[in-house]
Image (cartoon, rainbow, N blue to C red):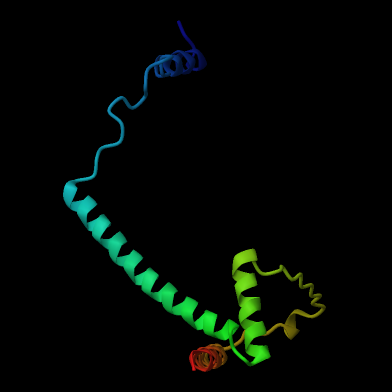
Length: 130
């Protein structure tokens, strides 16, 4: 008579795949044609949208690089290098001695900070496009 462990071992051996035989002989099922058509249309639409946006962004960046304003041209060049080569990692260390000093910013402060950032980036983009 087999013990529990021997039964588990013989059951496991019986369920193993045989060499040279696929565990999934029919492969992954194909997607229905309707799903493939929607995926293709979505991908094409997204590609066209990104191509248009990228073209506009490159024109703005090209104008900034050719700008007579050295500060603007330098900033554009730095942006190009940051995106192509990746921005340098900056290590930040902080020592907290009193946990009471760490406060959670309230939601209103976060909203105001986000609005300032958006306004600043909109102003920068507008200046570059002129």
